[in-house]
Image 1 (tube, rainbow, N blue to C red):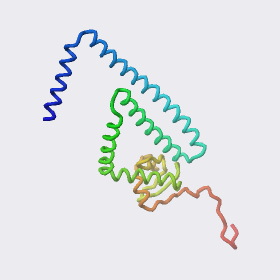
Image 2 (image 1 turned 120 degrees about the vertical axis):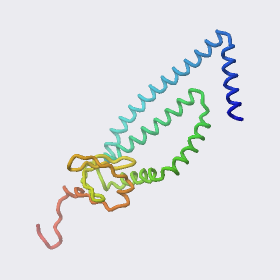
Image 3 (image 1 turned 45 degrees about the horizontal axis):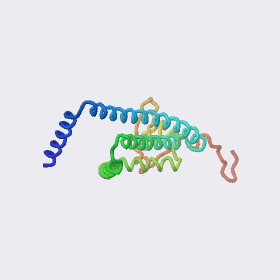
Image 4 (image 1 turned 90 degrees about the vertical axis):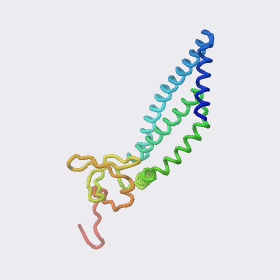
Length: 198
């Protein structure tokens, strides 16, 4: 029944548009064109500003944070920026933002239940960056796999093996299993035991 009424509504609007005087049709097309142009300009300018902001943020965080924390912070800010830009673009096109946000929250809850493993990996990734037990370039061993840490992401850690193979290990596995950081104290000075010389 709802489908039939929506079809009738679309048909009525189409016929109304076709029966309009030419000058009114032109005015509507111009109005839609101006709106699309406005949204396009908004997307381009906001994308450039977000990119510049992320570059500045990358330089600031590089001075005060570890490399992996800096990367993760910039990535989170960039993704949040994309969401804000997208929502504002829909608002400029005339969509009701509250309705969109309501639908997005319902979809988000459904996706959250469906992807509990992904959420666990994201939370584990935040713990990895916060604890600073693994840094970029460290050689680690986890679950019998030994390699150098190439990147620490929200979902996984990428290891470069000695044979130049890349292995992706989910963050949850690293949090739940013993991890040997082989090069953690590689450059640390050796302290003699009390009562013994070197």
